[in-house]
Image 1: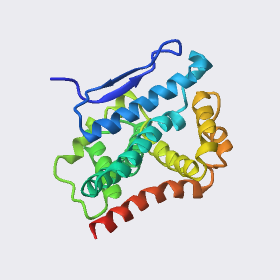
Image 2 (image 1 turned 135 degrees about the vertical axis):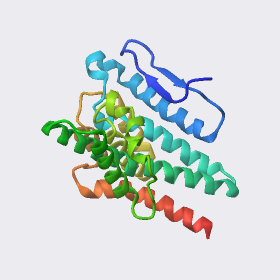
Image 3 (image 1 turned 90 degrees about the vertical axis):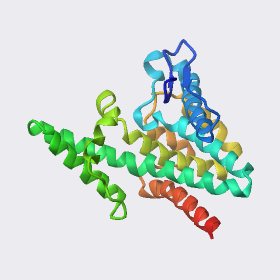
Length: 242
């Protein structure tokens, strides 16, 4: 069978990025394609910085991808017949929970594991206990974790191949929510600032990159705005269910 998953590979600043996707024509595939093309656009715009400075820091690595996915979702939702809106909203809410709540739980698990590993060996049983603790805390009492779930940490390849990367998904999702609010407030003024942000590559910190938008990620209100976007989707879903 065909390989599952999707990614964008930038190679180097002198070459066009390559996007891999097993496209099956599903709605999820459309959003995934938008996500990976967002990475490719980011790589392309940042290429003028050269190979050493084109790569973005983790704090901005998922910005263009999640932004492109968000724009595509908004268009799909606006054009969708009423009977399809519930499915779109439910999928987007689930994606938001997976990207923010679940990835933060992954990061907490990873941090706790490494903290304990500094003191000595950590048994497989103990790793499972840490995993269950963090997953249980993120899901709450309404979700019961079945026997065997303590081993599911092992399927998250990031823990081995890209340590301490997962927080970038949650960080990027909330950051993009704030950017989308800025775009909604001033679409014409937003576009050149956004292109400049992507073209900067790794030459600026995320605080410096967001300053032209009037956004301050060191202010808790910035992150609350990101959470507010997910809350509005949930409110819209509940209203549609009636």
